[in-house]
Length: 577
Image (tube, rainbow, N blue to C red; front, side, top):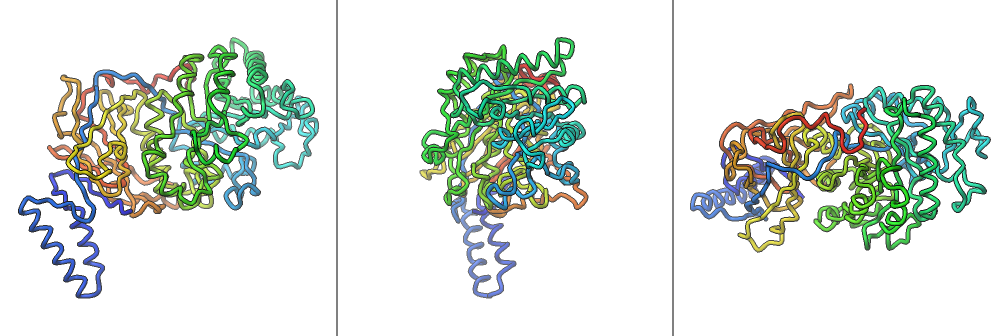
């Protein structure tokens, strides 16, 4: 499970990682016999290297990975807010202790660590949502609509005061986040029945208060994972009524401030998944969207969202499953993207809620280095399919948060998201990877080496590669086969000049990770460590180690697809913040 760095700036023999581990063990060994055996092993390896044998000792393999990349064109885009996150309404009673003091109703929004980490992801979208969003009532006495009028006691943990609503709005505004608010799609139905039309009185009071008090709403959703409870025709009618209400509260002259209409947050489980087999009552197939979306199209809907959880938090095999191509490949439901292109092509598409596993994740797995491979791959894969947002469940809360729920310090996934946010620009390419067939090992399957490419954020012409190696034994030497004859400094394996950001950890279970060999720790005053890359100016090979996630900013590449600045351009129908 070791993921010791093997990232070189000058040609290094493939046995170097093995030698390094032996030397470390030698320093730690206390018994003379162990030292003697290790010394003998070193001599044997050096002798083999000198003879040109280069044996694959200790399970270490070195293979060539040829990356073919068209630098002249791009067919996909994402946004500067791709890396986004959620606050949930869950109370302490939800799978304790995962949600103690984590509800959006009581979360400490003044915590310096929380604020510092959230600000670092600006202009991320902060979505307030979750299952209890369809229980929450809005206490707006100034509009004669209160929790009591909605049949809820004022003391209920799901009665939202306007004071707390303003605090959530100020948190987003002060930290440069775009606030997305999930509205209750159940409480306003006659008798609480899902077959009755939705009364928008309480929702209208909340939205009017937001307009009058300057609470910045980037967008609103209606309901959370209700696609098994409400018929497509009735749900579409609810959305049309909400669209009309938004137009009335924010008329034509306020159109630039009008919240986007986002939905419908169906939970699309991967076919054959544990969740689907359990018969979860929120299990939804894309067939629901195929009935619902044509009734709205993009004249009504600004953003299509769906929820996606690949694994199950109570599955004891989750850690093993995550580190497989089969698990990673389930992140993208092709049917949803096809429906969007058919019925609402000008709408954005987001994952409105997602993590490696539902049921609040799994402690020791979805909050550790293991999860980062899934998360990095999800961001890369979905960007290739024109997703402009991935709202991670959660920023903090549960066992799958980007931050630790007790200290608010970053979990490994946070640093993956932060580097993606800082380096991976809006213009997305689609590299092809071919692995050399010099070994019969199953690790030669190119699915274990995942490569994504974007124009580098803020650098005209430059390209950044995201390279994910989920293989536990194989080192891959990257060779770029560019398809743009006018590109500079890209011939064969010479990828320079470049900035390297290589993430690694001592084990998959680690919570502490390193970048380029240096620990990534925040300070007690909530300051992030400086993410200073290793800059390479010389002719050198580029080798990625087992169980590493790397970002390579190819500053010397002159890509026509990346000519000019794209970072200021919002994606399709995306409002600037």
